[in-house]
Image (tube, rainbow, N blue to C red; front, side):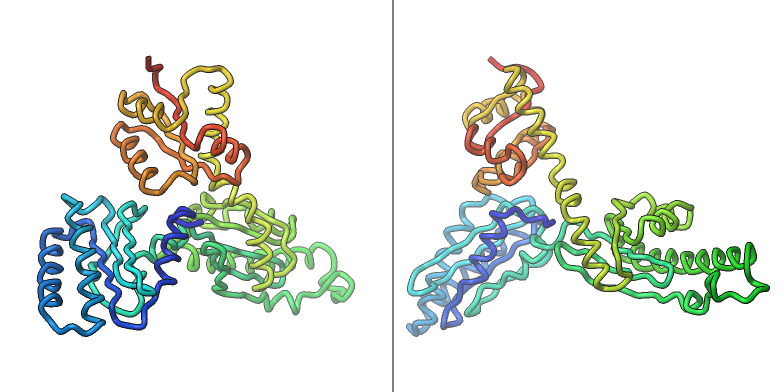
Length: 363
């Protein structure tokens, strides 16, 4: 679950894999608020110094990279809404350039540097998880808490119910503790431990970086017991995304919880695309309030007739960004349709990956 589309992740990986045996690869990352003209002037100055400097191979390659950067930056009147990242250099004796002007989140810091590898740190936030889930496995004798960040399970804390180890069972209890008195004491000890777990959950999941959702695991009875009362902080109760049967209140249990929730989380993430796609095919069947194909969708956007724009994830990133921006300008929704969801491949192959639900018909 990442802010980056598969296409963007692939492009970033290409940049990460590029390298040279000289310090001749140039990275420029420009935040949205940066003065573009000042950046251009700085590169012009460095290019001039490189051009009239020594003729060492490294200097020649840097000069070539700066020349490429000059040309690329001249194409922009202003910094794109989320910033601009440009890479240029010579890799395996060939000039390469990579341009990222369609970023899903803003660039935070200005970067201008040379190296034998490109600096992809400015793009790191693009591949970070878009949602973090709190993981909580609880049982009578213990509990485990962790975070689910993308596909990574990060353990946070484990708790042991020390009282539970000393709690007598009905078979081993002394005569004076049998019956209702014992059951009351067992319930009291359990409730006390559950309260401790709820406090730990509040610390772990509502701190400086609160989670976006909460997953709880354990035996069905225990989970129902733990979540059924007003024990959890109301904010966590509101974030509860699902409960699952899990066997171990340990790191192993946290991984088991994440695995059992994976399908539902993926389905929830894809829900807007699924719903839009269902509506799209319904309208296609009725031949009412829908258009498809690149040119027809473009026309509908021109007439401000689009209610929801649908684009397959296979649509080139630059083009998808342009169309999505046009949709936002007319206050239309837009969704990216994964090819691996139901009818996602059919949308890509049968309609070239372009579709729109209309506000009104166009001639």
